[in-house]
Image (cartoon, rainbow, N blue to C red; front, side, top):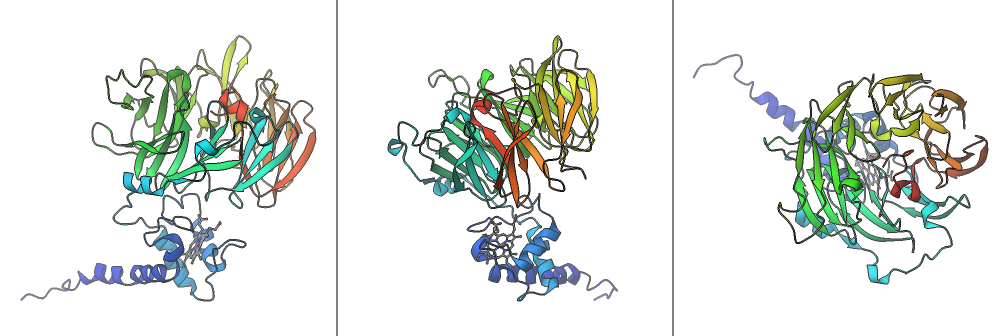
Length: 500
Ligand code: HEC
């Protein structure tokens, strides 16, 4: 037998595998699995997988493990674990699970909970508020949703949500039912008449968002773990179909969002990883089916486009990529690119808005990387104005009845400020600082555009209500890290001033 100096080299990976990860696996099994699931898929506590922890820093995770989360079931472990052990647990939960977790149709089916059967729901609202002017406000701080009356400017109800709602709350076309998606894949259906959760189902381990079809019959969830699109019956959240996100070449991709395109009777899916846009027609007439229902129409594009804005008619899609600059305009009927648009940095198109300006219509988008709002003419697709802001922002909102568009500077050092832009002059009209030193973000208008509601996005935050014309503060209601708020009428009527 020959002896080489490398003879024992094979032991190295074995030792590595056996040392910290094995220790972390044991610690996890003993201390965490009971609440976070043996495979980290989440149970009473949230899922602990890299996809789910994307928006959460390793440092913050170490802190939570050491000290726990006050007023929740998450205990602190600093008396049981050394700093090294905590660090190895952090590395463990941020490493992908091998093999990748699955969540098949049986798992979806088994997870479904019916809280209230539809035939037990009241015929009229049990409260006196106008359904059309209700808002649902997501409070991320303690995972609750507040139902807010936009006429009386008062909350009427507050209920616990699933862990970390995101991607926006959507409504049935009549405004009665709200659909929510949680980070960990739970889809919930809430009745605004009875103020009851009616059904819930877990469609995946990690979900991006949901959309409701224009006819209100289907809900589509876009998931990144596993990479699927799950279609549910909107009346009871039962499973209709699962579509794996794999293209004709066999390449899989992460969906970044799904949008409903009601005038087209379809859903449109934004994909990361592959240069395709998917359109999924919603079956119109059960009997006349040439293709199997929910067959995917693929539109090839020049570059990956994972963030969209549509024109009001849904004939054009304006897309940008989080990874490459510049935007593209896609003619959805022809299925091809019709223009390039010059937008620097990283536009946040899904938060972009449109309004009539002079003899044309413009779109305006906040920018996650650059301190500007870019205004583009939607006829010539030329940039007609670059409005400098105090820094990069995230959300932009207006209303048909308001002369102003509001934009935050969420991703900057001046994140306690919001700009109010005059839609006629394309200049900043006023800069507000609702709570100095605290993050101000996400505005939504009441149904008639009379008031603008803004979030102080902090644990001891608030909903600040402004008179949308005079820009005077009307009132302030304490809330726990309020984030998005969704007005029923503005959403179901697809107001040009809000994301759809
Ligand atoms: C008794 C149940 C329980 C145990 C045991 C437990 N957790 Fe948790 N954990 C929770 C709950 C519940 C939450 C969500 C708290 C909240 O509402 O913010 C949580 C949250 C977390 C979070 C924050 C996740 C996020 O996205 O905000 C991390 C990280 C975490 N736990 C890690 C661990 C680790 C590692 C262990 C084992 C050392 C552990 N947990 C043990 C219940 C538990």
